[in-house]
Image 1 (spheres, rainbow, N blue to C red):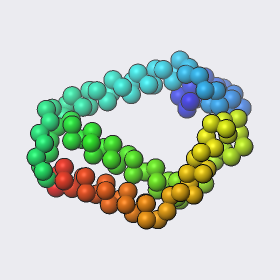
Image 2: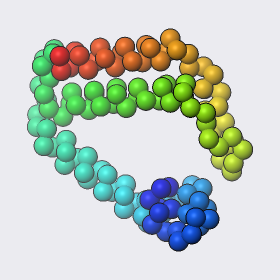
Image 3: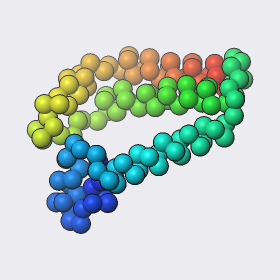
Image 4: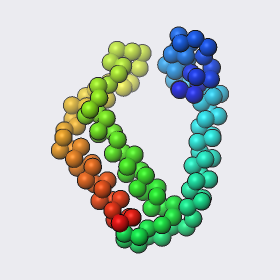
Length: 125
């Protein structure tokens, strides 16, 4: 949405209108393709995977730790920020996010941080 809005819109109103559209545009497809190719190239440079506790190497362990760290941001953001669009055109689709923010407690955020730390420590020491 951001790539389509920035690439396809000339005014602020046009950019916001494009970003609210759920379809994938030309700029969005180009950025998505560039993202996938870049990610594959970076993973290829990491080499073969070596799975040893506290001494992992390669693309496999990097994907595992990156996925764990990326998912850590979700409970933290749900707990610390309000959901932006509570009455917009996509409200029916995203209304579960407002309810989910009430389910995230400090204990769950702490558990997410702790599990991320354990996975990262077991992989890289």
